Amino acid sequence: MSIRTLIRGGLVITAADEMHADVLVEDGRVTALAAHGSDTAESWTAGAGRVLDATGKYVIPGGVDAHTHMELPFGGTFASDTFETGTRAAAWGGTTTIVDFAVQSVGRSLREGLDAWYEKADGTCAVDYGFHMILSDVNEGTLKEMDLLVGEGITSFKLFMAYPGVFYSDDGRILRAMQRASGNGGLIMMHAENGIAIDVLVEQALARGETDPRYHGEVRKALLEAEATHRAIQLARVAGSPLYVVHVSAEEAVAELAAARDKGLPVFGETCPQYLFLSTDNLAEPDFEGAKYVCSTPLRPREHQAALWRGLRTDDLQVVSTDHCPFCFEGQKELGRGDFSKIPNGLPGVENRMDLLHQAVLDGHLTRRRWIEIACATPARMFGIYPQKGTIAPGSDADIVLYDPHAEQVISAQTHHMNVDYSAYEGKRITGRVDTVLSRGELVIDRRQFTGRAGHGAFVPRSTSQYL
Image (cartoon, rainbow, N blue to C red; front, top):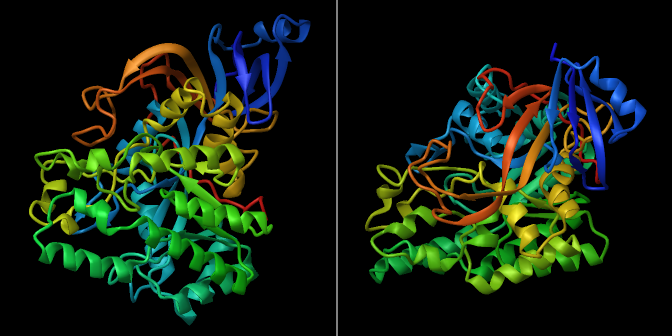
């Protein structure tokens, strides 16, 4: 049982409202909100076991990061954050729920893959977590398992048009999975890049001696992201299935999503902070430093950023997740020295998302409510955990962040809590910082001190997408 907590004096911001209100928390949930200074709010003081002063701060829902990869095996190594270190870093960054990806291995069942991820996460997480399921091998057996997983609260399934020989599915398998999802209520998530064509371009680049990290971005062409996005949309139309395209990075891919949504199709898109704040300039950094920024889809030339921000404002992109998949520069990213195709794909970011998006508010890209919408409310709705997560309302889990909008910080690997030896945003000055974090009413960050524990985080079964 958590302590009865009163949060006083802050500006409560949700996707729908901004209001000067006090928040009462009992038994891990939000019980009520009342106007500052009202008799109701004043009456709560006497019975509160803990009073948090939020004067001058925002009171916002805990972030929902719907795309993380803790302990992911990739390219002969593993993502460097465990569920313990990764969820602790998430808490430091104001994220109180992650949805990670369980992986089915080719030739094995979905159940076996899912159970392996339950085992990794159980008893280790500092904040709450759910799972999507990566489908690596679509067949009659795994199609039937999809139905069982939906009943268990694993209601989204990721397929890859990229990575032949690893995660790749051809159009026929994708269509079968989409058809199954159209019947069981599941949401298909798609890594949309034409992996077959990209592999040809990789082979040709290496044959020309083009081995540096920057060529990773040059061979994974924006047109091949757009083509795959278009193809995924058409396959979903044929199957009568909804579609969620992950880590959208290219202007041309946003245009495909916008065209589909203009037709009223249930097609959704996610982008990530790296595509909003970084570019191919980073991939081209000398002395192999560019390897730090190798991820897929790749970073794009800076001119693509305007289309991504516009897509977030017009709701052609609905969610900002991190695709957090960290690999240390020393000993992991270095596996690709002399061959960019061997650099493990992924960036650290679970700790930085909420702060970077607050900076985007200050920079004029987003409103405060849209910040909360794309980082908290919409991912919770998209993946079936709203209003338990993603808002501050009576009955919601007391996943609450006291956010100081005036504090200044410099992002650095010296001060971050992710288990990785570099920061993708090293030296970036931003305004706004997490001060205090509650997860289900328990303090996990108390005025910039970690007070949480491994094992507090609970598995969250999800309903089907609330947008369908």
